[in-house]
Length: 117
Length: 112
Image 1 (spheres, each protein chain N blue to C red):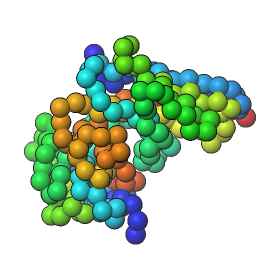
Image 2: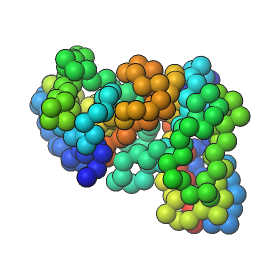
Image 3: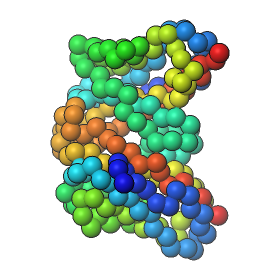
Image 4: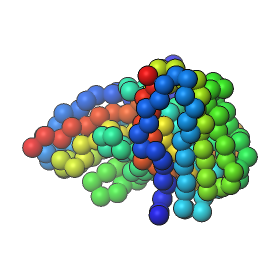
């Protein structure tokens, strides 16, 4: 496996379900991210983890709960979602969280397309 | 005002045409700038970084104008395979989290 891998690729869930999205990176990066991409909207940053520590929570509702057990794995736990949460959820990683033109270039996974009924 | 603003398009051009996209950003202290490309139903991928002096990669040229706070991407001799959405990305200052802000994207359709 290379790059950034996300599972599942597609997920349909009811509003009362609990599910999780998984992301794994094989790039030796230290920073991992969750982004949400809705139709006709820019990518929205949700969470950032640097060296397993959460460094950014972009006012995300508590029905989204991230978990980063180590620098290579990132989860997004979902519960009691709303239909408006249907979107493409993209995981990304970068070498570090430091501001420099090289270090914070993002590598994205293919995304998990979520539909909430 | 949006932090990063792009004309969503679509831009419909014939093969071989030259096309240019602009992107404006609101924070004058923004530090790093990028163009990403996103194919339909795929993830974004880095196309090129944008440097103050301007930079070129084959048929693609990126320019940065800090005074006017805009970034441009020029594509020469368009190919069918250039059809995609081009995302302008800006890194916010005063942060060590590498927080990137994405524009909505500009869609390009190259026709035969």
